[in-house]
Length: 187
Image 1 (cartoon, one colour):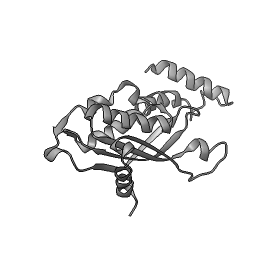
Image 2 (cartoon, helix red, strand yellow):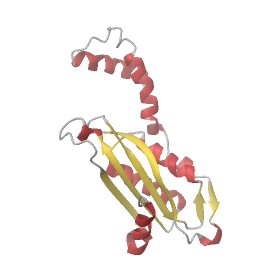
Image 3 (cartoon, one colour):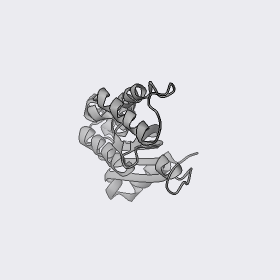
Image 4 (cartoon, helix red, strand yellow):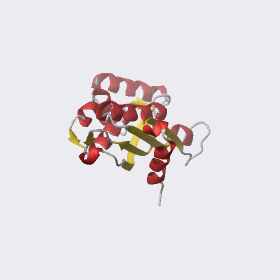
């Protein structure tokens, strides 16, 4: 990332909204924003494949579904550059390989830490798991609140957007899809 360009842009933005970027409270803001961008948009320089590459043999043929639910995430809406955040649920029916559970959460982070839309994020996670693990099927559900709907526009706090991506058996076998949805239900 180009820290100098980010700092210049923040100064111009502050001037554009009528603020004085040289005011004591804002003097260090361009630098803080530039450093924040390294974290918030850190997924731009990463590949999820690196996280999903360390795999283990699926003992017993991988006939049981693996579900990691309630993975918290935050991302930035690419249309308004404001946050959206929520939970990701991932389920897969292993083929020959499984992956460490934390690697699924890391995959979420890689894609979420980019300017994003929820619909694409859901599909990217599902596609990465499918591409790297070659499971019998994968399903991803994301539930999120978008600040672009909360703090601007329609201003409806608490509104949840839900997206689903199904691949393999979760796409072709309704009972597998329902099993995943039952497993992620709140108890």
